[in-house]
Image: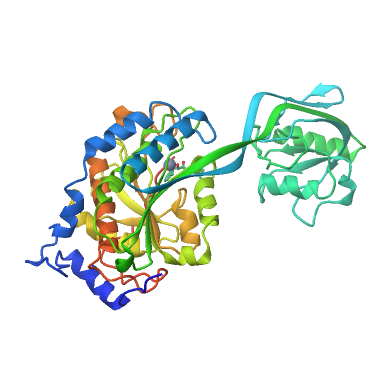
Length: 467
Ligand code: BES
Ligand code: ZN
């Protein structure tokens, strides 16, 4: 691995200067101008073409791309082919996950010959049991009675997660779960894969009546669940790498990511074909640029199932690999006409997990002022996307998104006609200019990947995305 260059003081100076438009190491010089792109910026931003991005969104959103479906695989293979066309070393990285299934789910809960018509937990094991009922309250760890062994646990909703309640009674040998709600509705309850007992939900008053009945003597219940459970499926990450020339290599890596999966039944034009389109466009534009830092473009699968692709990818990195990654730029929902409201920067915001500035937000906020957007980009605090696992590895990471969200979020109406080329262009320019500031050979390498430079002046916003 080639030796890392120079020191963070220089980088800091460079960053501060760049906000004033005077980051003029090497051949570029001129009058500082806050809103002017440098010649280095222009090498990237002049090539970014919103029509390409728009066409990518149109193509990907022709069908839903839910993780583990043919639609996802088709999308992932398309993305891989594009990366290959641009000359990247490319990999389709499969990973398995368990998907909750509901195939004509039926749930029966008979007590004294009467069906209470329960809700079946999402992912509940399908099985039939008849046993006595034992009331176990909230089912907190350490507070479940031994008497629940071989019996059906009656559990009160609240305080701890559904999956933990199920696990705590399973650990004591329970054979079924009846959860009673804190309201007169039932549609709640989630079980994990491997929690192989049927689990159903009843209303608050049904539960309280059952508790009363138990006070005056034993009660036997019959639970039958069909059509519910978990199925093993395969999703994919698409990874593209471009390494610098050996004699120019800092050994560092900058990552640009998006997720290619959609929610089931949703075309996911903005969520997140938009982010993928910018990843591909930046890969195209940067393919033949001189660099001293590895560029790594990744589109993740199964983000909508709980950030599964990005967590899987992160789990494949050695400590040394993770140490070499200096920044992760995540673009998720960057093209909606109807998002962002009246907020500054056309509604674009950079969300970090801890609500603090970092290298990514420092670079991109400044880049906003020098590129098509012509405004400093604010930052805020939010997870809910693939920047999370990178933050957990200690890597400076941020989510680029227009907030508040559009009304079409996670609906079948998240279609191409809602996409705004200008927003795609602005965000891609910001990320492209920021990435190139790290990767171009004339700027100093970062002293250590997990140390961010001094922040520049831009604002925190306590802005909720809604939905
Ligand atoms: N694109 C969204 C992320 C998002 C949603 C960011 C709302 C900001 C506001 C993402 O695809 C998503 O829907 N994420 C899930 C969470 C994930 C862990 C399943 C969400 O927010 O519900
Ligand atoms: Zn998303």
